[in-house]
Image (tube, rainbow, N blue to C red; front, top):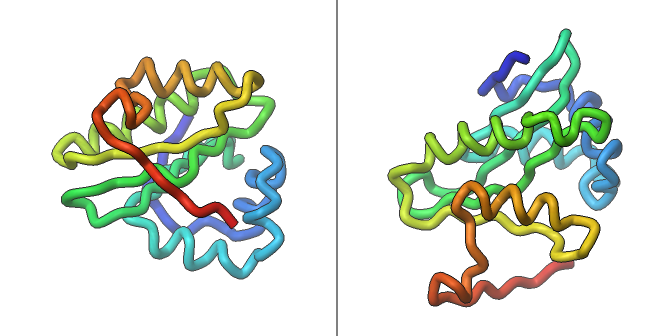
Length: 137
């Protein structure tokens, strides 16, 4: 497994990965992939034999806040430790940042993901004395 911080990733390759995990809200606007990768604070991708198998994208200022916007692993490669490796790299990079966030679906089918995030130290904001509010469109 090779990990890269290069942002020079073919948009079609990214779209294939995002489509594979069902994130069509991203892929219906292919032109967004250039800016979303280029303008992120941190992007780390995982490659196997020249194929993109995972990606994490973090937005923020790199000083006071980091938001893990996307953690995407090809369905056939999930539960192999790729997501954990990507998150470990992000947490190392953000160790100096006071607020690091990640959001995921709270559905029963997704509890393995919630457990992964909890195992890495993430907690629901009410447990930390906060409340996170959002508008999803």
